[in-house]
Image (cartoon, rainbow, N blue to C red):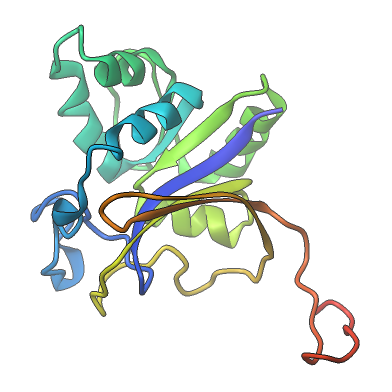
Length: 210
């Protein structure tokens, strides 16, 4: 069975917008693009590569897809990251994209998203990774379509910007599968969907689920 895995970089206050470059996503007047720059370390890259090696396919929003499509097909063939990303199937969710010249790309229309996720989950036992794609992630989270979260948290606070868990997020419990700290102070937590939330008073008996 396929697994939907959301991998994302966030600040301590949950902002995921434009970590990689100043002009990545300035929507909403966001002024902090490229905020992840000061937190690279030698132990960072190999773990990113491990994630992509485990991925069997990519599920992307249109903006992230366009960034990828403008970069990875143009990298040297002996670049191991480029070779991996260019070789795997990619699904881009968009109602405006007309077509794609990047071989291996399938366009999924928004109205078909649930059906396509169901199809991917019913397919081979592979991880389908969602990278970036802030707007798409909000839909997946609202519909409870994410099986695992790979959350890279960085030691800074921005106060503004698109958040991983934004308005409309459904309550959900998660189980921590593993945690790893990096030289820069970044922390990678791997969470799996953990069932329903149990409510109650601290030190008292639990109450019914809400």
